[in-house]
Image 1: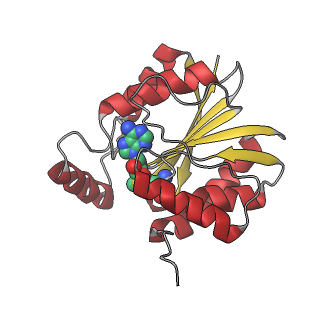
Image 2: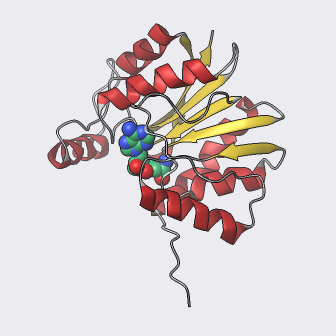
Length: 201
Ligand SMILES: C[S@@+](CC[C@H](N)C(=O)[O-])C[C@H]1O[C@@H](n2cnc3c(N)ncnc32)[C@H](O)[C@@H]1O
């Protein structure tokens, strides 16, 4: 039997439903959706199955992740998922010049701040006015004490890589604002995560 390159992250099975509930209504009826940091690819095949009129462009800088995304796409017979791009949010230029929405789940706290800056710059460049950037993950909020689970997660991330850690939501929003992406809405999600929706001005 051939080696199966599909990888699996248990959290994706828990969060993909709640994410799709928020993401689906935000997206246009047709067009190309870019996912930055697709990881295993389990999210993109799920979204593609439930939103079949949209074309999905997954991406990840990791070759192992891209192999997993491609394997999930084949296994699911997802005809509306394109082959994954090698896209590092922090690197210029991006290997894509246009998308009708950008989705980025659980990257901002597990990458350098340069990746967030690059994400905002790149998304602002490839989106047209009025189109959304959807972010999902845990954040610090100025008016709230970090929940114990997120505080432990943050400490663990920082131990693993000093450039990682939960970001201040205000700093992320300001970073988007500086590139022409306005914070539109924050939605509380299960397990102390947030959906953060920005829109190109
Ligand atoms: C925790 S995983 C999340 C994957 C997937 N979105 C999910 O929620 O299961 C973080 C992902 O971010 C990717 N990543 C890290 N740095 C990145 C960067 N600079 N640009 C794009 N992706 C990056 C990693 O390769 C990894 O696949």
